[in-house]
Length: 125
Image (cartoon, rainbow, N blue to C red; front, side, top):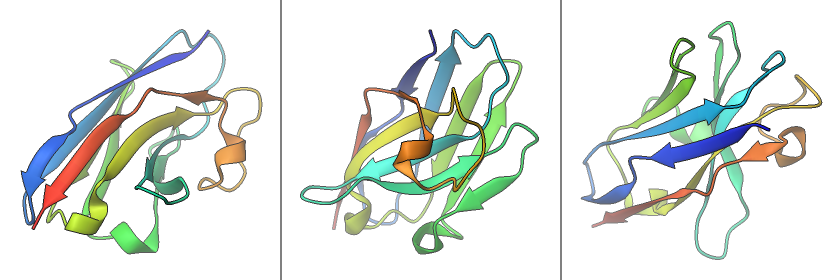
């Protein structure tokens, strides 16, 4: 069974940076997208970035230029570098991975089988 473990969240001031990391374990078959989603208070969970096994990356328009997703296939980790943090970035960030179905729209929650517990990012103004 695939398990995902996030780390790296915290509380920072606006303009600061954080690096979130997700470690995957238990993969026995091909891997599709791995992605980061976030869910702010009272908001829907939204996809912010995804990376395909070959390294191709995808970003939500709202985070382009500030978020960078990367992977280390040898370590089975996917990181999310977040720069110039804004108060509206405050959210629980979740790592997600595909399992039974590979591909499809990267930003849709229904395309992901595995989820981490989340790591909290809080940005103060």
